[in-house]
Length: 279
Image 1 (cartoon, rainbow, N blue to C red):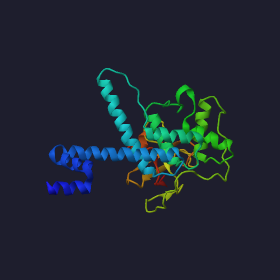
Image 2 (image 1 turned 90 degrees about the horizontal axis):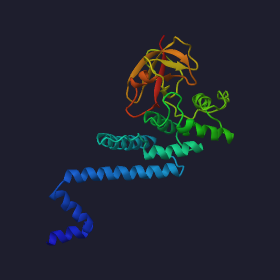
Image 3 (image 1 turned 180 degrees about the vertical axis):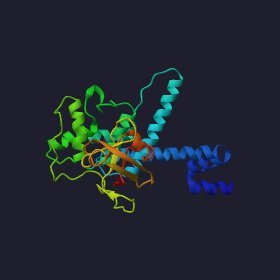
Image 4 (image 1 turned 60 degrees about the horizontal axis):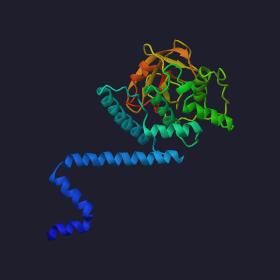
């Protein structure tokens, strides 16, 4: 009894009950519940930081999206098993990101904004062909680009091209204007790399997917059609060698099949890439 009173003095009544409960029954389940609660609390804090227009740990935010989206999908599948027809949803973290992206929040990481835009596409909340959202409106990412240009701020070449297509599909100005040569890329720079066996091109560029179907291929704004490129994801060591088959607004965009060969699960952007011209 004296020992238990001593423990209560250190832990408090709630802490003592937690310890006793863990030893009496379901200790593993309680630890797992605690872990999930901690993750949920951390994601909620990140969401508040994003909403407050503060810089956040991008990798942590992407992990929160993956966890939350998986939970949403589990619920959707459970509902489908009951004969219901639930729609796919995007995570709370990406809802916060999209809201800030639509404002053209300068502190919002471009890669995170693009990740959530692609999550929308994966969740079928945007049109898979045109990329437009509900009611044929441009997505949050491109609403943000529009807001930035309205404020006189520079928009990088990739976003100009990418959003120009959405604007055209929505019935706006058919193509985005040529970007100013002084426009600074909004994406994270990759570390220098060598030793891949080909001529490194577009050093520091990130790589994403074009959303196009078909056999593995790439498009580029500076490499001619027919050029063979080797793209290596330096974060996981995976690489693919494909031919450039069309033009785009970025150094290299991979189509869906090629991107699947090098991507990390749940991610829609390769931040650290080596792009080599091999043929």
